[in-house]
Every structure is written in structure tokens, then in C-alpha cells.
Image (cartoon, rainbow, N blue to C red; front, side, top):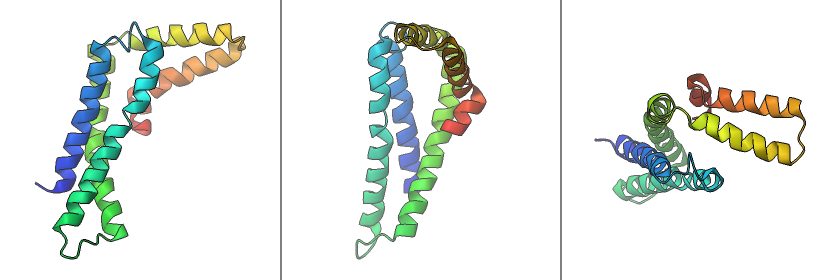
Length: 143
């Protein structure tokens, strides 16, 4: 198996497991304030996967020099494989595993925005953007 596919699948599976762990710990339902920060930590998984991929690719080259183009190409292919896996998982997650989390997250965000005296029109715009971002089309563009 090509290293790009191996590390892409591992990275995608890592992100999916991270999201499931957040769900099981209640970070998408009861502890949304903590879940907001653990979502940022999930970015370490793709960075680690890409680092390990490039290190493995460099080790297979005789002189240990990986060209910039080859490195970018490998990273793009591995990222594409990982993103297809994560996209499929997130659509399934949003529709079947935890379909109510978007509404709970919006209630929490709206309460915080109202406490900060944000205008109702701005709150409505943010609600619309949030719902669009987690729709299947929105996920496709953000992933």
C-alpha cells in the first residue's frame, strides 16, 4: 500500500475516533464549553499524520532528500484520502449518531451571544452560517 493511502487512512480514522471520543465524553452535548477547545486540538492529528508521512517518504529515498513538489504531492494525496473518510463520517454523525447536537450547540451559542448583547440580526446570521457549515454541502467545502 502506498504510504499516502496508509497515512491518509490512519489520519482520517484518527480524526473520526477523536470526534467519537468527544461525543462519548459529552463534549458535544453536556460540556459544549470544553468541546469548543477539544475541537481545536483535533488539528494535531492531521499535522502528526502529515509529519509521519513525510518522514517515511524521506526515509525511502537514497540520499534522504525529499523534493518540495514530491512532499506537497504526497501530503495532498494523503489529505484527500483522510478528508474523504472524515467527510463520510461527519455526515453520518450529524444525521444518525448525534443528530441533535447542532441544535444544542446553537442554543448554547445563542445564549452566549445574547449575554454579550449581540444584535438579533447578527445572531440570526450566525445561526444560518452555522447550520450551513454543518450541512453535507457545507462540510464538503470546509473539509
